[in-house]
Image (cartoon, rainbow, N blue to C red; front, side, top):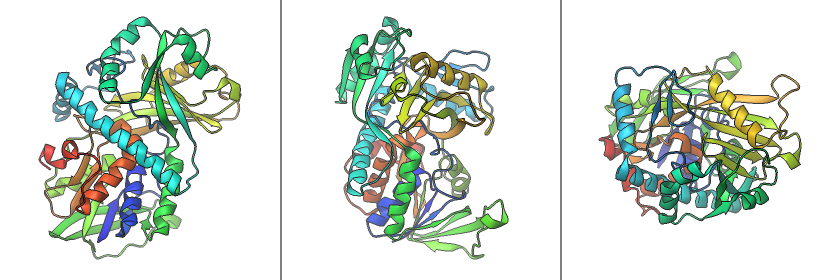
Length: 431
């Protein structure tokens, strides 16, 4: 089939690779100048099964703009219009059996993606920063007790983990600050950390070897369904400078089908087709800095359960990530969230990175996560012929990318999928 993939983040690029691997003629359309320039650029790098569990509290909560608690979804401003409805749906999906089922669906896909990532990396001999094992840290007995329900849920799902007392946790991560209280930890076993952007760049090259075309600085203006196996895309150049300006044909480009992987930008394309995504942008932040002293740095990754902040080793750099903000302004970083990231890093690994020195030695980043109220992404064909979706992964886009791509490629080919996709279909929202 002649297929178009809209979006070249890690989800779109991996989807293109899997489709090209199946022998399809694939064209990727991306508004930026290369792959992984937006939500995939500096994510937390976590791929461990179990890291998305509700370790901090049993149910979802909101934080008002004037509060500073580390848990819950932070409102940068009061909601407007339809945002109230989305937040209500999000809160309801975080209760009781609905939360349990949502996390079961997410962990199924994260585990499958973890396996597929490892398979692709080994089969294609890809070279990217990666490491095994991850610790979820409890500062107090109270924190550990609050996580009992999440821990039992992980055990019920068959996720490989170990409960550790503080001394064993410190033995696994010897650089943990001895002055910071540590009650205990959970060790998540297996592939835990991988560099998202490095992988995206590598998998782009693999897709190109398979014949996939990448059209950068190209904006998809509209999608027009023309029948069961005909979709027209109207394109324009999105280059901001003359050197980036891309020549695009005036007439629509026809494909057999289109797979939309454009994250938070997808709603604009799908709304004219009558596909109204129940999706909102949630913003996260990260810090990236060079390792100052390897002996003072983490060996793999830790997650501070009380603050929801992860610290991961990526070769000779450290990535600190966390925070979830609703209603934030793109490009305006949250000073409070950044302070919390610096504080948690200093708490656990003081002296691990170079925080001083030349300006720009620490990269501060804000990313937008296209988030659905119930958690699992949208994977599969919509009610509009020829229009497929692979989007809405929220904070777990990197963790779910490889599995989502393989499952969608199998479904598009009419094959049985390795995991049950009933909980991920666009039809659950009437799409």
